[in-house]
Amino acid sequence: MKTRECNEAEKLIISDLDECLKPSEKERLENHLRGCAPCRQVREESRALLSAIASDLPEEPGEEFWKLYHQSLDARLKEQALKPVWAFWWKAAGVFVAAVIALVVIRVAIFQPDNRQIADLRVMSPDIFQELEQVYGPTSDELSPGLLYGDLLLTVVDARAAARLDDSDVQWFEVEDETGPLYL
Amino acid sequence: MNDADLLREFRKGNKEVFSELVSRYSKPLTLMILRIVRDPEEARDISQMAFLRAYEGLHKFMMVSSIKTWLYTIALNAMRDHLRKRKVTLVPDILDQLADPAEPIETSLDRARNLERMRKALETLPEKQRLTLQLRIYEEMDYKEIAKVLGGTEGGARGNFFQAVKALRETLGPK
Image (cartoon, rainbow over all chains, first blue to last red; front, top):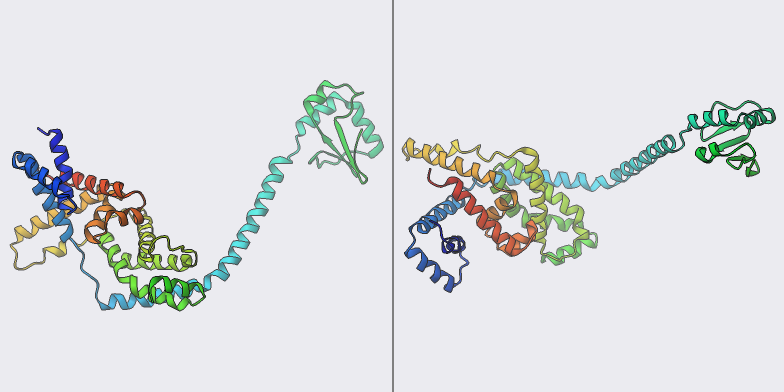
């Protein structure tokens, strides 16, 4: 049965075979091994194993291998030396494409008109829409980012707040014309 | 010209000195890789990849370690990437080792079987344990150097070596 000393001996055995054991440790190990057959077996197995691994070396390649090695490495290095110019333009093109995609995604995700909110507002406050249509004509179908009345852009500021207001509270429409934003 | 001089020259723009670095380290580096991957073509490719990466990064190299250690680190990283991709098989040349006419066929077969078992057992080791064992045995690196090229501490590398031998002995022990 393995004892605590055996566990310690196993570490010392491997260190010993690895050639880095202090003389005092070596003496302690030898003392243990004299009276412990299983640990002697561990030493023999470990020695055989390390020796088998050390001798299992692939054959070294010949002259032809090294000649080809240097030729192909030279070619690859020359190819790489030319690469930075290409790499720069590819990187620049990549950044440009990524920026365009990001803008499209942001445009679609963030500025998507909420038709449901605007439809709700039409039901809640039809008078205001009628007045706007009388002054500015019918709305454009392009609702992003709000309703377009001729040159005016009507943006919903907060539909929930709007639902709680009556027609006299009209701050919830922000209207922008050529002179800049103004509030109705 | 020592490595530090080579580096200085390279930074000044004299790219030709890189070939001196290649002639100094290509053989030991490629052989180190070959002993682990056991395929000359793959060893050549990985070794060249390491030199290409070194060429790219040499102007940023701060000499905190030796160029040799730095090159070994690059090569080992390239090799680890490669081994992870390829699903390693380290046993292809075992039959070649049967071709010893002076040996009885039973002995050759036994030896080949044992070798196959050993290589398969090596493959099952965690990567860091396996590489520590191989660098220690094949390259005779000390634990400090192994820690530098594989990452980690000297004590950790020593522990990995111990665990590798213990695991292999338990796997390959008498059945």
